[in-house]
Image 1: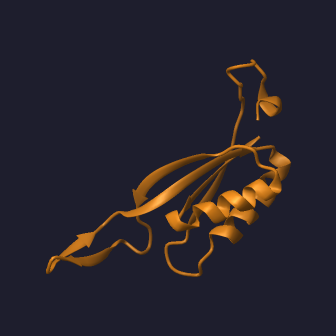
Image 2: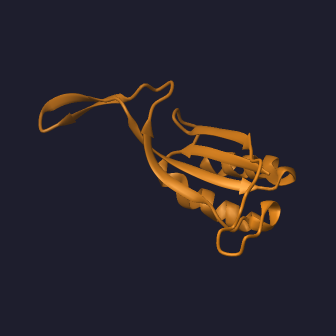
Length: 112
C-alpha cells in the first residue's frame, strides 16, 4: 500500500476529488494548510498598506491506495491539479506498512 500526499491549490480540490472518484477511489482526507515553495509568498495591499503574505493557503489531500494503483493516482492528481502557473503544488508517495479499519477490524488492503 502507498500513501499519496498532494499539496495543491484550494480551488483545484473539487477537480482532484472528481478525478479520483472517476478512478474508483472511495476515500480521502483533506486538510487546509499554509506554506510556500519557490514562490516564497507575495505582497498585497490592504486599506492602503502593503504587507507580505509569506505563507500561501494550500490544501493537503491524502489517499491510501494499493501499490499497483499509486502511479495512476499520482498521474490523475497531477493532471487534475495542474494550472501551469507557479505554486501548483507537489505530490509525495510513501509506503504504508499496515492499516486497520477500526469498526470491523479488517486489515491492510481490506481496510481500504
